[in-house]
Image (tube, rainbow, N blue to C red; front, side):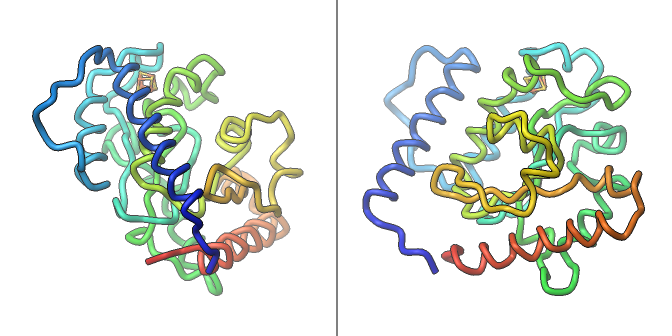
Length: 232
Ligand code: SF4
């Protein structure tokens, strides 16, 4: 298991504080009252974030959505999965990865030599509202929603992030490299590591065994990193 130094812990704490303050600023908070609890755990913090996000109109994706899909899973997860955007099923149910791609994601996590359950992970997307006709989110939409993802990650403090597909991976890593070049490697992401792989929706559209084998290798890599770095 990787050793967490006091420097890492302080950097994480300051990073989380900064992300939380930016999140509140982006929601229009200009004053912080002095009463109340500032020592919320991740579960309460995520609940408060989800509540505060309701009605968000920071980007044009608000116009076509039915529901804001905040994310779901274990609030104490050290393994976080980040996809691109909600689809039709997710928009209808308000939950991430519940359609066909979501069912494949569940099977990928439960696969042999990966053996992770959805209950152990937290699953979310780079944008919280469904883009029209399932198009890719645009750069300004990703930027508008980025503070909300940053605040979620600050609350969760993951050790391993599995990013699904090129849009999420490029947005998180700030690169234009194709997913085919980014996958198969461990990338630094703050005090966590980020492992990219193909989006399950892509795997459903490309049923060739080669892509599935590569995705399975990525998931096994993520599992090994998780076993090395997890603290719970
Ligand atoms: S995608 Fe994000 S920033 Fe845009 S309206 Fe939805 S919650 Fe707000």
